[in-house]
Image (cartoon, rainbow, N blue to C red):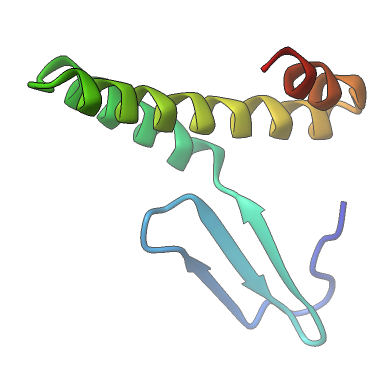
Length: 92
């Protein structure tokens, strides 16, 4: 995993809070903001409850599934579980 070394020149969240960019002296690193994904999942689940059409519920569910997948992939990278990504992609 690449981390910025030395002085941190800037930190910036993406508009949807899913990513965090960290700029150092020579590098820029972009990280998944897992807590941002958690709040996104919660918001999407609330919207799904009030969705009025089946198509809207399906679209929201697809977005929920994508955000959950990112969380699992992030977890597998942090804890050195290389097979999780392959297992999830094979199962879908």
